[in-house]
Image 1 (cartoon, rainbow, N blue to C red):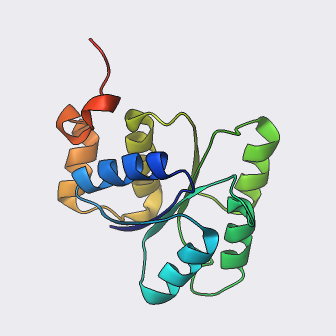
Image 2 (cartoon, rainbow, N blue to C red):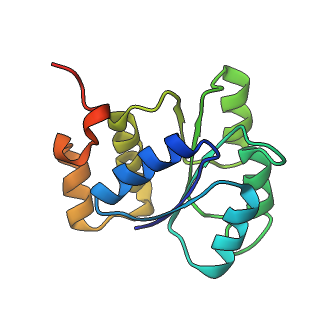
Length: 149
């Protein structure tokens, strides 16, 4: 699965990118909507993971822009945000997102959402990626984010 990750907070973006790569995903990190649009022009992606709140253009505005094109009208989108009140989720859902994850992001939540998107008929994961996500080995989770025993 090729994933484009749009996260304007460098630490959060690197953490998510590390998780995706450890789960054997082919992922690219961008930090602005403009970078994301350019990356989409240069490469085909299977999933967009985007933050909601960003300067200049929100994740919702970016999705609305993408949905107006034939190429990205059906692109699966996972939205993440620290701003997760009911109206934000409703507004994001109206743009056609596949799922929503609230920050602070827990690796298990991200893993479950990726599996849910795959099960929803997208079939984006390879068998190996599916098994890695399904079994949720902590070997795939950076030490700093592993549950404390």
